[in-house]
Image (tube, rainbow, N blue to C red):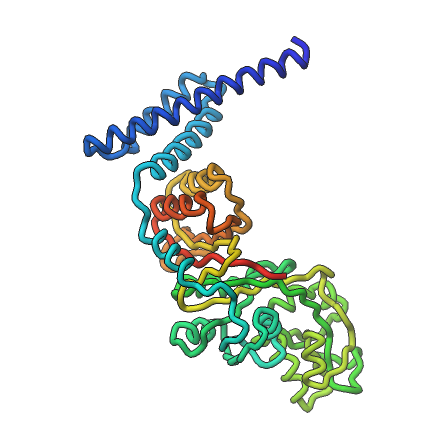
Length: 380
């Protein structure tokens, strides 16, 4: 056969498969309703394994592995379809709907906001971008931001989640496992680091540089050009700038922002020293209660799956089957559970989509533990 004949036969086979798929889904629905009417539970795992083995055997030894993947995907799609047909909305879906109905139509212009660090911190700059009038309370640690929200001391908190150069802020993900909160908005902030020192100090004089660990990681190439200089980690870049400004030493500098330089009266010895020009940090704004403002098209969840082969794959297949885009997947080790992990997902889908509600119900059922972190929009 020539190429066109092969292509035509492939098209014919695809058409037959499409018809068979529709027929299979119809039979799935009939079986689900019949089982429900008779008070029977869905097919058990042993029955599913036997059906999968028959499917693979029919495909032949050479195609057995591929057939197993196809069958597993068909099962995931069928289970999602069955759940949508038969199950009542979950408590989570009810809470999400209630949040949609009760949240104000406009994001607040003014609010009390907890930020880690001191004035000039990037979190403060992010808060000022989120709110027209942010009443900021500065706290010493990331955990103190979560505590300020949990106690009601502040309505919102702003925290760095990830950087385009240095990656995720792991401490935030670990704290997410300990606290109840809701993400209500996020913002991407362009971050430019500069080498700052007291007036009159030259770069050749510098023997020690202060900054936050993320900023240090983002300026690795520049720091290689200053061998022998000690690098000291601070709570954040604004604290580093303040520390240099208040020091009597004339051999110290900070990696910090233009704003901090102006705020603390420092000179720029070198500008924009981050490794990449398109250096962005993503900040999340968290609150104590779920608030879903109009236009929310991003959802974050945390979950754990059973410690069995294919558990995460099945979950990912369900997301794919519903046509939802997964924009971030992060894993963190679970305390006291060897080689087991918590997974953080960012999902791109409108909260008004039926597929979103279906996915929340599916994930809640499929996972060992499931935590809905909020639905929100992101500003740039």
